[in-house]
Length: 216
Image (cartoon, rainbow, N blue to C red; front, side, top):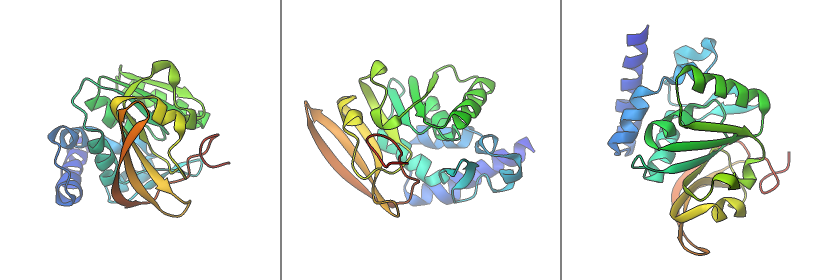
């Protein structure tokens, strides 16, 4: 079974990621390594490496592999960064980040989901992930500034606390739009309160709930 899942991960990379333009070798290697099926209920394991999101309970989803790879690649990680993730969810995106960054801080608003993710991180021996339960739209100021921030839910506008918690040169990757469709935007902190903006196309995420996002 182990070899079967390894084969499926290789197939996922070859058929879903590389043909769509994922080029960062470190990202590709992380996607080959992290066992996505372990972040899902066992009944969903046969679909774990398919090209679509899957439910994880509490009306939340695990993103399709391509979106995970794309958002990760857009952070341009080299291995020395401190990264903040908003929306731990299943923990799969977190684990991919942990393969690529020096330290990952992650915020999840739903306690049951956060606790399950923490157990998985412990079981998989990730020592560079710190998780907390809270309002992710406020970020996690205690550990800022961050080299990168990734938001795995959609906001109507970039939450100001997240922009402010970026270091100079830091990148915020976030879906921006209405509750039905969004664009994947990268904000880079140039200097002080100046930010550049790049649009990387359409996407669809669950809503980012919180004080600086959507109301529940």
